[in-house]
Length: 126
Image (cartoon, rainbow, N blue to C red; front, side, top):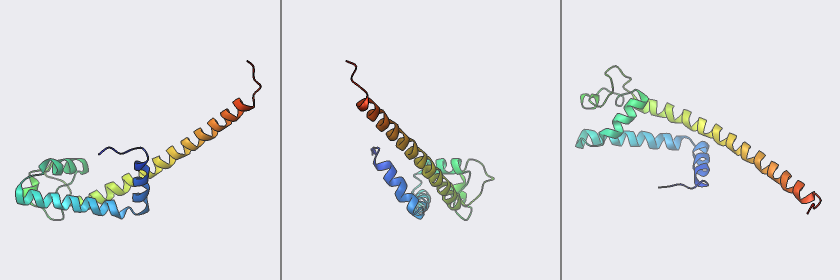
């Protein structure tokens, strides 16, 4: 799914309004991935990626089935809280960067308007 330039800020502002939505969705996604791996044994690439990025392993209780997917054995066992911390910080940073980009775009529009007015008001030299 490719998003256009207009959809990205809309999604960012929607999640900035209520960051609990994405945190809840990621927690549900992680829990369902754990459940799928425990029952069928599939989906280990997703869990390995989450565990290696967040340096955690499993949910609130240690599970020997999930320990196989952990990068090391001495990790925090609660990935759900680490997911919430990670995404709440990332959403904050995305919002700050989005506001900075909007400020630069506004200055660009002001300067281009001033340039257009200066060109229009200059005497014809042809």
